[in-house]
Length: 83
Image (cartoon, rainbow, N blue to C red; front, top):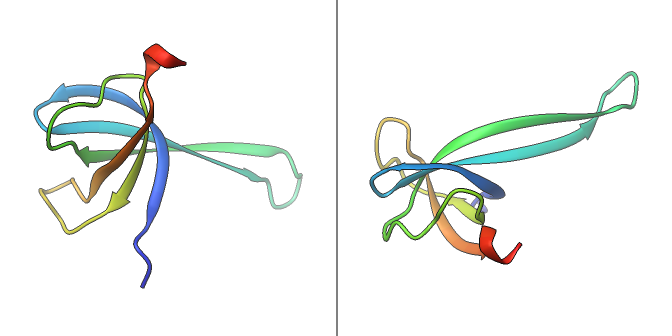
């Protein structure tokens, strides 16, 4: 079984060792063909609290770390300052 990975943008970093990452899924509507954007927010473990709001990050699935946390930061793709 492959480990799931997603790429998203950090939308909140107010918790300790946790960030909220919004992941967009763009897919065509089955009947009409228009591109529909669905956004899902994940609570992600950030051990060293190095992610800031606006950073683009790659996250991967892990064992349950708390009631709602099942993902961890794999790497930071680019920061808001460099965009």
